[in-house]
Length: 347
Ligand SMILES: [Fe+2]
Ligand SMILES: [Fe+2]
Image 1: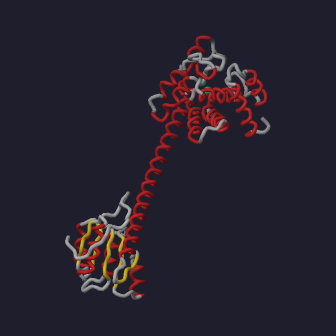
Image 2: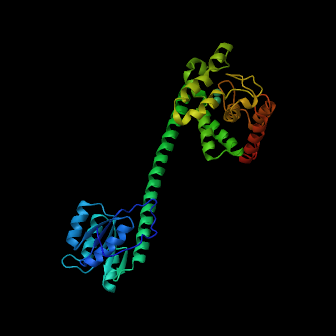
Image 3: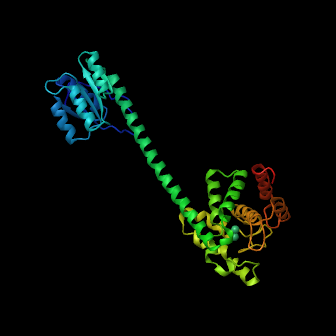
């Protein structure tokens, strides 16, 4: 477009620009052309209309981000155009241009949703700042919307994760009727210990999930063995000892549980290297497995078994103390006792 007006480009932000097309509506050609020259030199596409009816037609067939419209025009006025635009697309920002600012026009336009006023002769510096603000506002709105979408997506994922985990835990309980609640309690104790040694929220959540599913491999163990109301013989115990490997096999294909596969596999390893399935020792055992081992053991002692009543907490702690450095990581056991004492002062 050729124009008698000349402008230097302003310092309008080009990064993350969200406004591309501006519609200028004015019955004075000089106003249309000066605004068009100013916007074009600053990198925007400009549409021009000499009256509101032509503007409405352009709005029907183009995506427009901002509208600058004269108020006093023959036929449909700028205020009527403003109402038409706001009814059709409330997010389009409309700025009014007026020969002299009349208060009742200003009030009507603001009530109708106009963003601002410009009186003739136009102050282009002010117009530039206004467009920049409109861009920032639009960018912020887009970011807020994206944040909401991501937040909602994360909530769905978290919910699906929790439901899958609880479902697996429930599947174990259905098989292992003497151990109802064992996964949940082990998860809670494990989370408490993880918090005590400084795991962040996500780490604690994962450890709790590990507690919920640590015995999921029992799904693969014979019912008669799992629910035997007495002590297991050697062959039965050998069968039960397969549950950590079966558990690893079950959780590994679940993407959000992949990091739990090894802790599940190794939750019966012992610090002194005499555990199973791999006889890992000391820090070879993943820390999450060492946490689960302590939480699992504590819950097993303090819960009823087919062949015995729950062991009182002080007695259970004494049994565990004797396993310090044998079954348990000594440092972690100390942290567990500390955390338990803080949670249950009489423990
Ligand atoms: Fe186990
Ligand atoms: Fe267990």
